Image (cartoon, rainbow, N blue to C red; front, side, top):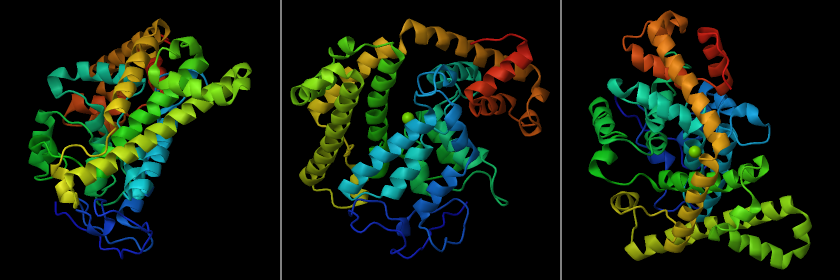
Length: 392
Ligand code: MG
């Protein structure tokens, strides 16, 4: 599979002031299958458009982030989460002169491989696949864009640029990296063997992901009634902005929702400014001048040490108080049972799956692919159809 660089004129849809450390679509490492350049879009804009038009992207609207899709209309789903990551990522990219289109493409694709029911689904699928190569949602996102989407006459997947695929694969085990390396020497698996860094755009998306979910999980957690403002005030990162907001707007004590939003807004902004500032300092301090040098340096897009500490404290709080809340754990347990029983049912009767999955040479992998692609509600319907029992 020859890599093919898209030589679109630099002027097409490019930002006015790109840093020398930004990925440049005109110098992309290319796509796995040669395609003529698009007349009006650069390679990364085209990747983003392909992601937005994919089936897996549309399914994100019915996939759980923390709360199951049917638990309320106002909670985040994987889709709105991905849009928030893209928004935060682009803001930071613009300030740092990094490629906004690439950041947007990676952000919109980063969760495509997530199973129904969030982490509960992924853990069970990984358990079911222990003897058959395991299941990792990051690797699955890559599988979706490389293989599982069926939209083009000549190849499987979306045939995205190397840089977008590299950003999608944010973690990867050594064993999986070695397998990827065999299929695609020097490709997206290599950095997990070499211990080098991905592009700054990819690093940025990881951080934007964490900034987004920490903030929106506070919002959803409070909205659901599972965490209270009093509990949140034990978390330094939140308490500081809450105090600041009240000092400036004492009247908001009577308007708790606005107080919450203003505190979260300030927290988001400060994290964004912190990343921008810390990244600029790191680049200047280390004297990194080219993207190749950046790949060999440690992670450059990062929080300052104090922001990192406070962000980890918030993450731990959310883990203990929200993700491990008895009510969430109860639905998690049921969701795990749905995935476990679906897996067993399809392995026992592959013909219950669509023909392409049923006739695959690797049955277990294709059952995992089929289940991973499901929305929450489709998984529940299938579970009821196959077992005759209604859970959740
Ligand atoms: Mg995410």
